[in-house]
Image (cartoon, rainbow, N blue to C red; front, side):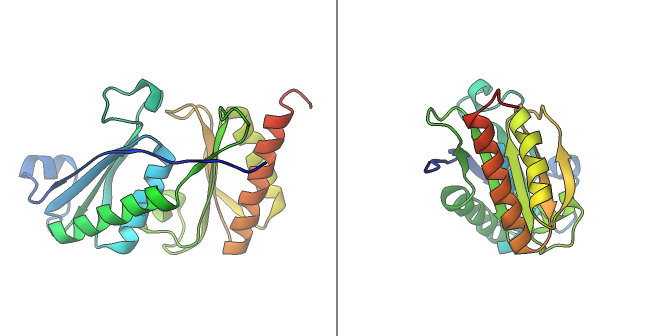
Length: 217
């Protein structure tokens, strides 16, 4: 079966070149973080991956990132989707560079895939060869280390995370027990890049096996 990618739609992207003091305080910005950029998209895990990429390509930090409950199908408005991310930096130029990097990641790399012919089962077997400051902090690893970012629906995620851990020399740094805000589950695994790739491949095959035979145990 050829896996079909599911790409996130970027719904809104905005910058505030000189953020107001009260909002800066609420976002807990550092004194040198004068500018912020924000985006919304229809897939949260792709969004988290994208804003992590921003921290690698510009002098920015992720200061806010949230998934919206129930997902993009039940969004509060046409520009909401299921994710909002905010980055902050010392200048509009740095924030613009960060947003551009995030957009490129969403458009070219950070894809979910379908696990069934009908396209109803979606999963995320994504390998990050070098983490930025955001995901490395979330996973509790050194910035620049590889990461397997593995997400699937509830039972698929548990079954496939177990397979991933057994298939390669990787360590689970974060488990997302279902249900997440968007009713998925998964994990962040770390190891060498080749180990993370092997783990992601095992995760993929396990998700596909559940999709093929959901009631065979």
